[in-house]
Length: 418
Image (cartoon, rainbow, N blue to C red; front, side, top):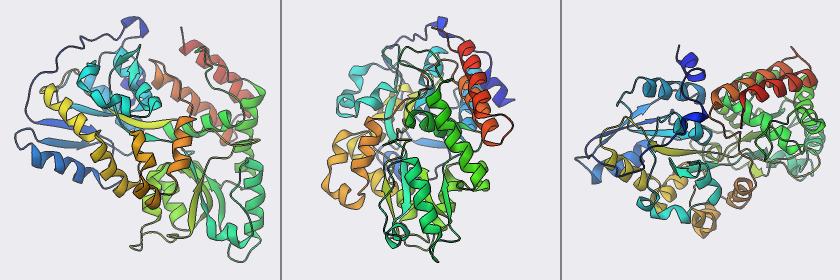
């Protein structure tokens, strides 16, 4: 029922998505709705706020791990005009939908003076029709995690193309230490992660899902090359069969257990894979590189999360201050030190201490700055569902990549209107 409500109904782009953008009023306790805290550090961040604001305490409502289920519960809450959620932790691609449907409050930019110190691409994700509806707290760029110890053993450098990655895996599997290691995985379960991985495959082959003109353009030779690389990966075993069920955490666990040579995932994985408490079998044995593409460097899909204020929330002044607190340079630095999640403050990528602790920061910044956004559309729920259906059909062999892309082009053309 929740998923049905998420994909249907609501206003379309003609609603305008305009809020007052006026003063944010009301102080007192608030509720923070967020996805499952896989980092383990959110409790510390919220506790830091609560210790300083005993009369404006924040209670965390932890939603499911799946982004699709998070979105569904937030939409259900909004459609019921419930004040149960005050601050929403939104995936960056939900901004247009939540703003156009007036589920979140327009924010006065002058109340958030640090926006100019954030990476410009992250601020852009929080806007709809040039108006501000969220505050970027974490960003995300896809990275290629790889077993450096095994590549070194085979005398190899990290791959820059998909073909180099395939060749490297064959050489590593010829080693006694690598014969039982799977080659590669990303996120291929039928959920938002598949939209991300499909988009990266298409963009990395020189194609687009939606062009700069806002029109879908996915039935192309470039898109076909990207999707075919994934389907052939499953057919040949380069991508293990089990990966069709992988979301972020399943893939992370497989990599940490030593079952994968290459793994596409987000920055948060670094801290967990490097843990020395016995939870990771590959601590000290892996490194990070940019995503490979078809003929050269790949293209990440832009990820991350923005905090927004529910239109139906009480105590919006407290909510705004909590968002400023959580997005501050101090809190973002504390968060990356504990979780390796990508910050939105530009200065943190140049921090010498952080670069020593997290040597991937330079390629991560490049990944974020060169990343492509998913379609910025009001009917995003329907659009991502269509992408997932097409990609999953091709990966599981129920349709050819060419037919999947042709059908997706038709579907997206009916969903995305200018």
